[in-house]
Image 1 (spheres, rainbow, N blue to C red):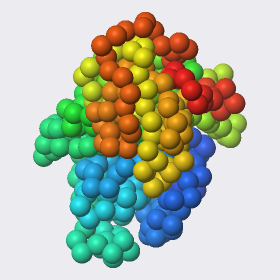
Image 2: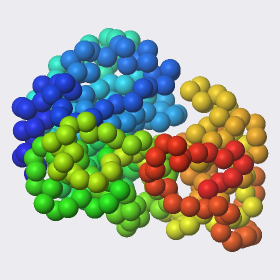
Image 3: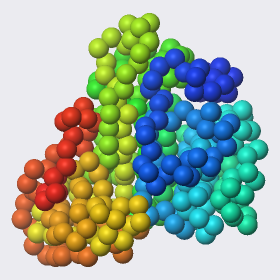
Image 4: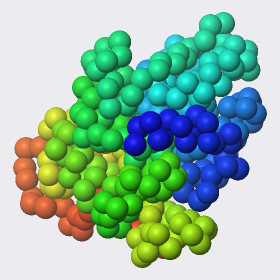
Length: 347
């Protein structure tokens, strides 16, 4: 399938208008990103096939790796957010896409007012990151946008991401997931695979894969139901439902399998420019500025041992255990109407 995907994205698709489904469709960006997106080169934007938004908070000065960077839209957006002291590295296997990304490197350096470019692009396979000259523990954040589903060895990808991240770093990525396992007969269809459907993981298989790869307690940031809007493809897929979902996985060794209650809480200082009123960790952790917010031990660690630590006050410790955190549940994609947030509970 690797060669089929290369041909699909390198030769068959000349732009997003050539896609046969709505799976690789972006969502409306938040207001603070719109001015930056408006500065990106038209050719880079036209060859973009993402399904989510991979620009988490607190990126200034960070080292970021983008898996399956394509024409470089997310790389250049992130390059503006990390600033001149940060770095963004894009990896892709498609020559045609990399050619688009590379020829607009100076354009974006000038657009963002940088003396030197803070991006670089590498040709390679996301299942073979160990074949590239990437230092272990080098990156603060690894992102990917609707690409992991195209990988033929997803466990290898997750393992390599774990190795490349710093302690406390995170894997923040959007992808397509299914509400059941996709039948094997469909996984050899090059169009279904290229459209990010046939390679989509059943969400529970993904959660188990992430945990086996060393990422405890995966957190769902947001999800939405995908429509295919192609009768012929819908007939092949039958009753399978697909979702675009964004997850964040933290490289923290001491995360527990469940949300345990140690009587802890945090207070968000409101110091992130893009989130002044409330910090959004995931789909059920929306922490209002200045408000005491009870958290489980895992959430405490995700904040205390990551780049977010300086933006919070921490109450309590791990000296006393009170059992499972009340209301703890799975972090899985659902219909948008089923996903809510609680201002005063962890899970």
